[in-house]
Image (cartoon, rainbow, N blue to C red; front, side, top):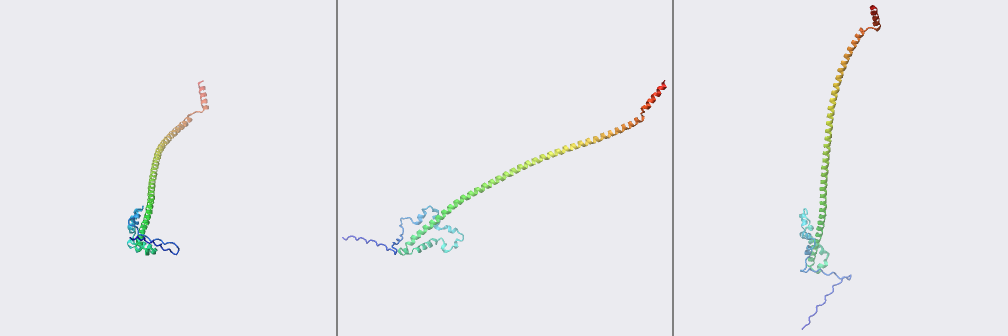
Length: 240
């Protein structure tokens, strides 16, 4: 029988002018392996991979229906794949039809990773913003509560102070009314005393006038001592 002929050894790849071997062509991934999309879904950015699958976040942009052609969500991966393929023209000539598939998977995974990173950063920013917002809300509520408490305390102190002032004013008014009444009583008593004093002075003056009149009459009827002595001597001689 004939001996099996050994296959010829593989030809060595041609070397470039610089002496370096060219990069081997890209190979299509085996069917048993996970695709780039599945690998991207296995990463922590699950929500980002789900959102990046349809780019629904672009639909939330106002006037998204009139976006330019290169910004449309259906053309993002296609445009990016064409640009990547355009930068590798030598691979497109070696494996036609396969480079586009690999590049498409790479672009899909890259876009999903980018979207995942962006949304992770957004989630972190939202969490930090939420903490800051909650902290600000709590601070504002505490400030409002403290302000209302201080205002209520000031109002209560003001009312208490006004109450004490009103009570003091009422006490002073009562003392003033009492003092006025006492003054009126004293004035009335003084008036009565003055009236009685005037009556008494009138009586004294009348009695003094009577006494003076009687004194004048008595003085008119009085005899002089020399006359009385002469009268006594005359009576004594008559008796002898």
